[in-house]
Length: 116
Figure 1 (cartoon, rainbow, N blue to C red):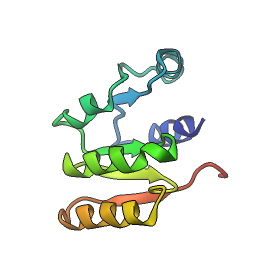
Figure 2: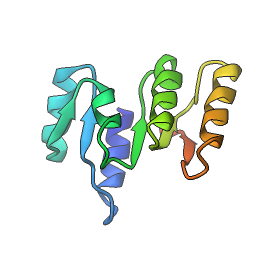
Figure 3: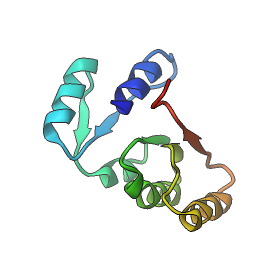
């Protein structure tokens, strides 16, 4: 699972705290939370976006949801690490870029850890 890769690597960084994990599957949430001893779990990503103490999100969902979650994350002023592809169409990718450009303090980054 791609999320495991990100979680295990971010836990190695001293100044990073993983406050939330989100999944539509409660079983996957419970399993991951127990594996990494994480407290904050939810099935609705909007709860994370509404948390004013969250600075960044990692989006490693199915590609068809990248645009919507990515756009809402940028609009919520979160830094975004997005698994590739950023979006499923070129137009969606450009719209994400344009939205991020309105907020120069926001970083949007595409990442591929599927083959790492």
